[in-house]
Amino acid sequence: MKDIHIEFAGGLWDGEHLYGSSYDVEEARLARKCYWATKAGAVGEHFSELSAKEMHQLRHQAHSSNHLDTHHDYVVTVHVENDREILVRLECADEDLRA
Image 1 (spheres, rainbow, N blue to C red):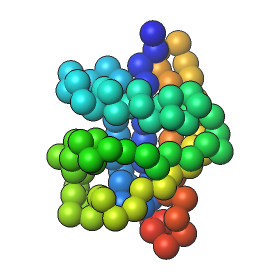
Image 2 (image 1 turned 30 degrees about the vertical axis):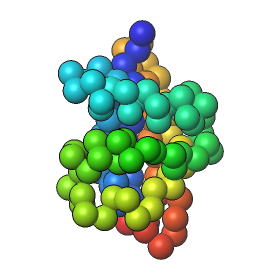
Image 3 (image 1 turned 135 degrees about the horizontal axis):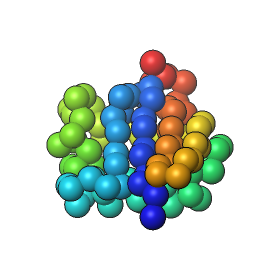
């Protein structure tokens, strides 16, 4: 299976990356969840659903950890595949939080 690479742009998760091949089991699970929740990274699909446990996992990774749980609405703007990887770019869908 190809590696899933989720990239966040803008908003509170700006610059964060999740990899389906990560040795961190929770990160790998979150990458797959983002991928499937956006209908396999379909451009135009939104992603905003995370449990409290998942928010804790992102808080653990994120640079702006004290603001993570206030809002998280992202839309898929890029879906690129090659023979090794699927890259899905999620951009902030909230105009007030865009970088």
